[in-house]
Image (tube, rainbow, N blue to C red):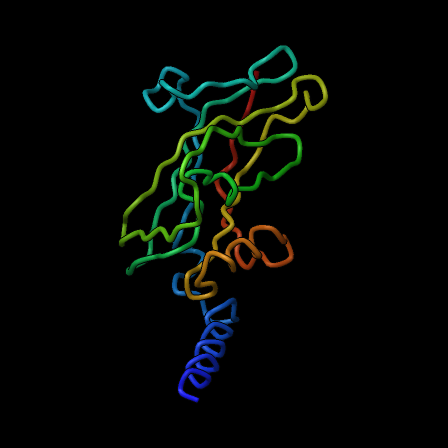
Length: 177
C-alpha cells in the first residue's frame, strides 16, 4: 500500500513538473541576444572545420552573445554542445552550420545579473539561390526553467514550433559579399 501511494505521489509530481503556463522567471526584455561578424582567424574557429564554404555557399563567422540584463538571475534550457538547436534565423535561406558534438544533452544555463554567454559558429547562405538576401537576425528559443523542468519536456518543445513560448530576437546582421 505504501509503495502504491508513493507511485501515485510520484506520478502526480511528474505531471505537475512538466510544461505549465507559469509566469517566466526572467522577463523577455531582460535577456538580450546579439550577433556580430568576426574574423575566421579568431581563436574560437581554430579547430572548427567548415565544410559549407564552397562555390555554392558563402559562410560568415559569427559570435552569438546572450546577455542577462535583469536585476536577478536568468535560467533557461539549451543543448550544451549543439546550442544552435535553440537558434532560428529570420529567413529560411540562411542557417547556422553544425559542428561535431560529443556528450551532447539538454542543460540548464544560469546567467547571473549582467553575465554573458558567448558561442561561435558560421552562418551559411546559398550564393545563387538567395543572392538578394543580405540581412538576417537570429532568434533564441528561450525555454525558461519555470516553464519546463526536464529533458523530456525540452525535447518536446524544441521539436514542436507551436510550443515555442518566447523567442528573443537579435540585432540585424548585414551579410554583404
